[in-house]
Length: 197
Image (cartoon, rainbow, N blue to C red; front, side, top):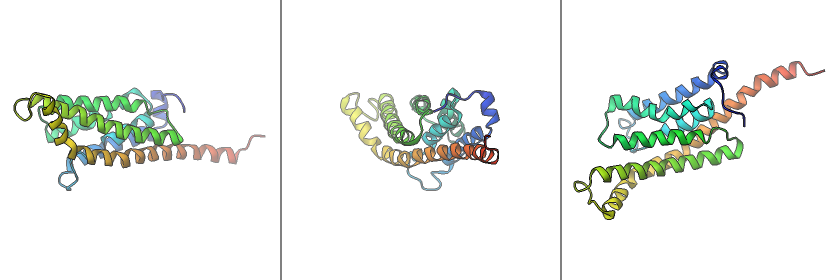
């Protein structure tokens, strides 16, 4: 695949940053309204938005997407003492999305599935560790049994995140592929109208 895009190239291909911003806005709005709509806990769009932004922008700034989603929505929703763990998990997921930015074709779909599963499992393991660490002696025993109890209690939150990301991140890969194909259409039309002599 092609190399990272420069800011000048991104300005010329303005639709790429626009689609990335729309994905961030959709993820923020979803996070704000999903409870009112009765959506399962942890069904989120942040992981798909991170994957899409990394592929569209192909720039290090794309790593900030999931952190931006949680930061903006937390201004309205608030957060708890586990904030350090949730925000750091989203920061790691944003950086991990950068590894997927140069994929294409079948490799992109494989990267989307792997990123969706890996992000979900990492978020679950890290944030439930944080819940256990901060609640030792209060919510959970300060032992391996307490940590395991925290992970067991978190399983209902892992399931919707994992299933959602198995659908939404490949969908983001499809949107990225569609953008790339639409970019090639004008170039093909110009070539057909003015074939090389």
